[in-house]
Image (cartoon, rainbow, N blue to C red):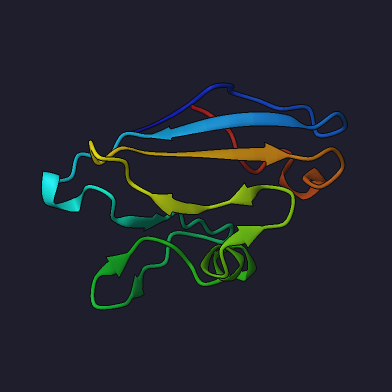
Length: 105
């Protein structure tokens, strides 16, 4: 499960959203590396030995490179309890292309 500290951020002012990834891995996965992946052009799938429900586009390519400019790191290490946390910072002026494309229910 993923929870967020905010539902929206002003595109003109920017802001910060803390994403908390509640991952339920076995204790053997404690301290393992993780990476968050996203795409903006559909749900794929990509077959990389497992089916990944993302489309290969520039957003996914940037995620695979480790960062999306203006968002921060999208990778890290699980803690001793197999919990991951990332912070996405949305800088002012960088996200106009996403207006109306992402949202809650």
